[in-house]
Length: 512
Image (tube, rainbow, N blue to C red; front, side, top):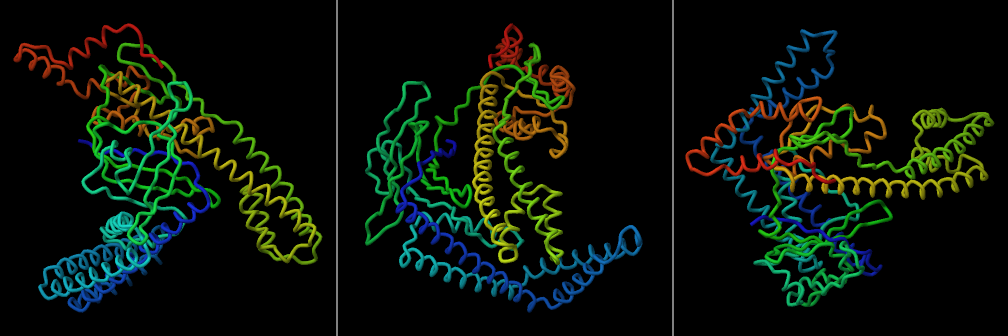
């Protein structure tokens, strides 16, 4: 059985439902913040107890801090010998501190104090859980998900980062023992109910529109559900055992959130991936995508992701910004005295061509400029904000469309071929590439292909697809001999050799 996650997008719910979801997300964030503070307090207590039981560690840490500060003041080029000596001392002191910390873990008295502190921390965490679940109404699946995220953040030696509130998060429902799709469709489970979907359209890709009733919280012992219009673009596997259902809210920008329902399930049907035969090579020579099978001709694949409308929006924003900057420069020239930071900021905006920097400068100039210029800048800011989010949403949509096209292409190759060899050369600096090459997303394309083929994906170096195939065969010369010997011993022809022979006899290249 394999674990998969099926995600379905939801239509933007009504205002009252959005407010109820945001209240639960705020409670989850407050619980996560409380766990972070508890973790930081526990770390401080642990370090203080370690200092008390190991006095030498305090001296070592102070000496290490002085050595690191001294190292930061030295110039490596002007004082190479002194820099190397201090650097050696820093390494020695770090090793000494690490040995003292490891020795403290073997101290029986220190271990007893640590166990007692951890027990008090567990009592406080259970008290927090009771407050947020029973008093404030945070649902059980959500705080289990929050606690798992807190444990993951506390696993390392570094201090966990303070959580940030951005109106996004996850509301989870744990389905004890798992549920089948039939049970969720029937409505027997009070946690989540999926209404029977109805098809819309006549094409093969028609969607299934339905409504998911999701359990948001409990009130007086009864389940409180919210209705979320959802598009089931693919059916759940028939043998699926659904263990978690999650309502995921992602903040696209400050004015828009994306809602989706995700199911974590165990299935064997969804893990079946079609496997082809033969070898396919993909070359990224001249920053373009060329592909060919082992016995076919090389072809060039063009995804055609260029969107001129995004560039048109950027040109309109630049035109409006230049006009606003021109008026600001004239206003500075007409003033008897102007602050230096204003002139420097205008010059920086002209140099970097930053529309958003001018947008924030307008707020800083409030009360300093005259009313006519302030009204003009307010009108410009209104248009700029509208164009900025429009362009950002369009760019995000194009990136998602490109990723979907990459995945579809990788799935098609995986269904037709068994092995993949792809150009493993390091790509150039993205800042120096042309706009057309950046639109292809070659790094993402290579990663998704290697993920699709798994252990059958390989990297090689070559100028063409034929050279990539030759280098791949040269790197594994014993595979064919081993397969032939195995076939002679068993009296049957190896399946791998049969697939290679079938691919060698094929005359036509695979369809797009």
